[in-house]
Image 1 (cartoon, helix red, strand yellow):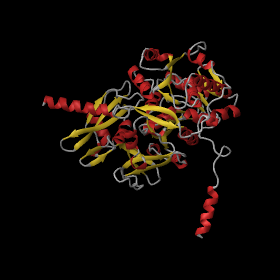
Image 2: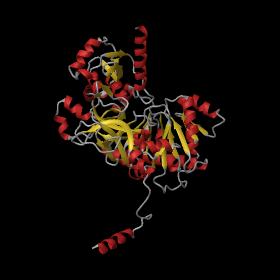
Image 3: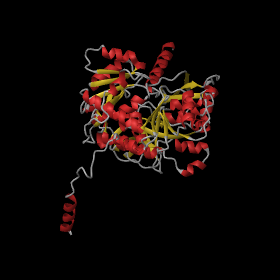
Image 4: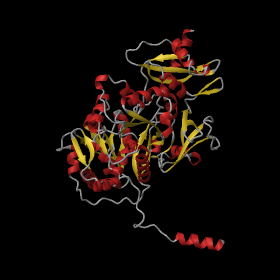
Length: 548
């Protein structure tokens, strides 16, 4: 028997992959297929400009060709700083076609931060939209940078980006992608310390993430996707490549404004979009004059904080179906999706919202996501109660941090990517975040989830945004403190009224006793900065101690 098994193994080992049965996985190959299958179909709509898949394929080939002729080679970095315009989508295909690495830069960064990124990445080319002319001029005048700066000038084909692209040969020979593990993109994340890290994605990871997103989001040939999510953020969650997989249409939007969102949805029969929670809030609170009604349901995916039931209800009333996602820059954007189950539709809103607010299950091509004890790496029971760290491993986890092996090794300790998020796994296999490890509040020895309290505060009719952090307490160690942004034209509720409201829905020890009202500080990608709120708590305590 042992001899037979050895012969079988050896026989199968005789097969060596070759060009006939193995080519490198890459998302850019999807564009050539789309141009072949859907040549006359709209690939990108940008204002009054509509580009077909055949035209898109030709333009990207031209841009890749002229990049190669300009000396860009394998592993070179090409940076771009632009809103959600057609050039940003084309760069996602053309730069990797040239064998280079695409670096999309956050459009909200200041000039010094942009220059620091260009230095760290050693970028060879910098495409920059005319909206950021001051940044372009500063880069040009920086003698320490050896970089070609090309302006993206809207509606002008005689100079800048369009003139540069026109120099390319649509039939020029491009380098073959032979290593699917080669870098395809570089995205910078500030993290929690303000120390930027360059997150590197591979062709393989990007291809599989795009396919996984197409499956989990229900993209198809009839899909029309509106770019409300910044394309600079995790390469637009790889959605630009995912839409090409199925031959869908992408609609550009230079600036996310409620009136524009509603108008474009109605005009182009948009079926999908993705956005941070702040965009949902913008749409919900948009004046009636900015809203447009449409005769179909639009699927909107949102990451970040779980959408409270009040937000889900308000979005559904506007004609949107909300899907909650979870992920990080290090996981190519979302890698968990709260996959809706058929039976949820018949549940009361409060129960349905509770299920929909969970972070969910891995999308089809992630690999594995597990809630584990961060100390001994033991997987924790699926009881919805035992809190551990959410960990990820698989095809759609970053290659690592550029030029930072120490940070890469720390992130991959124990053979998993350590997210730093604390959560539980429910008996049905759905993961739910309970807090960031640094955001959990320990009151009288009990763990208190700031997210749970925020969910309750969002139910209050006058609350538009809420964030909860720990406030040091001499008796309990820590108690929750709430920072609240009120809806326009509302009367500020008293702390006593808010305490009563919370106590009707929360255990007493979870109820905030301290409140502050005003705009919440946010990161450049729209996330609430709890580190600044914690600093504000320290200031308040210092003021109180000074008075006493």
